[in-house]
Image (tube, rainbow, N blue to C red; front, side, top):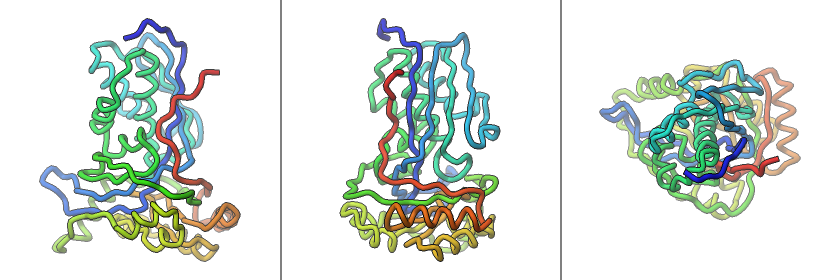
Amino acid sequence: MSDAVTDAVTVRVPAKVNVQLAVGAARPDGFHDLANVFLAVSLYDEVTATPAETLTITCEGPDADKVPLDRTNLAARAAELLAARHGISPDVHLHIAKDIPVAGGMAGGSADGAGALLACDALWGLNTPRETLLEICAELGSDVPFSLVGGAALGTGRGEKLTGLPVGGAFHWVFAVADGGLSTPAVYGEFDRLTEGVDVPEPTASPVLLDALRTGDTTALAGALTNDLQAAALSLRPSLAATLTTGTDAGALAALVSGSGPTTAFLVKDAETAETVAATLTASGTCRTARVATSPAPGGTVLPSA
């Protein structure tokens, strides 16, 4: 540890959208092999770490009442794992300012875990190697490493093994936030039920989609978006179909369930169309609210102190 004393460290972490989520059959350990193309988007949580006598968590923002404030929160687990690596006590107050939809398939909880990890590392002056931070992220959950890295990446294994991907331009998105959440394990369970007796192919990244990202071609990306969990999410939440139809009818180039849902993602051609689609979705009554964002976005970033 360094001798520097820091009063507070704030880290900004992005949401994600899965522009491709290819899911293999269930493995013996219950997980699924994935080809998961992550794209970070400009919706952010901020995690602030300050010294404390014991580990505590507070939260503010939309749906803050749905965020656990105990040791099940990934931010708390991140602090504990980092402290254990360095043989210190995880005495920190973590405050989460939420703007990423809660339980929405956009990795908000994972983002908070990555944010807490970076914030605690800086607060405690640990200078933990990046490779070690990514190891801890993978221990926390499949989506956490990408929350740290940001940009665009292909996740393999259960999604935690990342390969960075080039992106040739900005993409414009609208995200429709549904009422209530969807349990990721429940969605995977429904995927297993729907594919029972079916020969599920090995998941592989789409060359067409990767090329669309590399060249910044919005139209080509729209034609290549896929999510193997979408049928399962729609099975558990049939009302999402109306949201998807509303967004595409309003001018979106493509629509899909984001990750395990229930947030739905709409790729649009430009910022003006994004505002139109968001307004139409919000007025339609098929979702609670709609948010506009762009991608790619940077990963976990320590913000300058005020």
